Length: 292
Image (cartoon, rainbow, N blue to C red; front, side, top):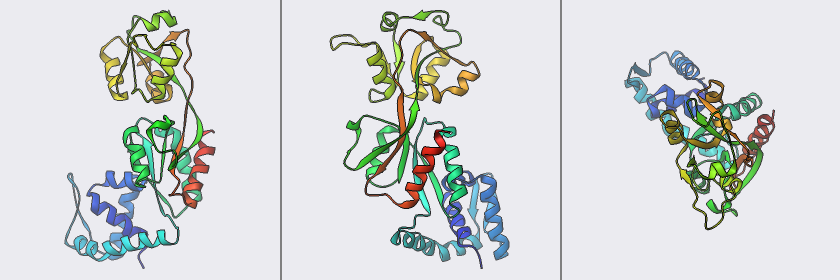
């Protein structure tokens, strides 16, 4: 008898028509997805896909199988929910969060939970709380944001650790050989993230701006800041953990300043109406693994 999990993997590959996309959804490697499809084909003794540079397209055998199992797989997935068995966990991760921070936790979860799959959804702060409220994801792994961005009666935050916002410049910056004072920093334009971000709030607090001061800060998304640093001599404030690779490779440099920025908390958000034991288990493992 064919393992039902192979049918589920087959359905996802058929839906996505792409091994890479299916791999991302299943959170297993592309070779593993290929192996599972091959195992299914071997057990059924037929080929199911036309493989080409354009993707994985169902052949006639595949189309027949898809029609047979599609509804059954969906029904079985729903029956898991009836008995509060969640084989799939939809984990939202902030788009800028380096995967090395949470990868160990996911690996540890898989070692202890053989029947569960974690699907990763990349999110930004704007849509993260909306999809949490709609229960389109089960939990979100992210920096902590202002409570004003979401309904605190519906969504709760569990702290895991701290991230660190820093001043950075590029390799050719005129500021590299200087130590900048608070007054120096207030007299130059500083680029950082959106106003609700920890980086912006920490920067305004550190420079002690008053209500009637002209705030000399430009808000740009993370990708925009990184691109600006490649071609302009700017000072930016971003999260150090997001740029560690560029710092190690000497593509970016920490700026010497006489002010310090407050640490930014990170952790997991969840909808209070959408908690189940597998999710609690994952949260516990993430808390332990991310601190190691």
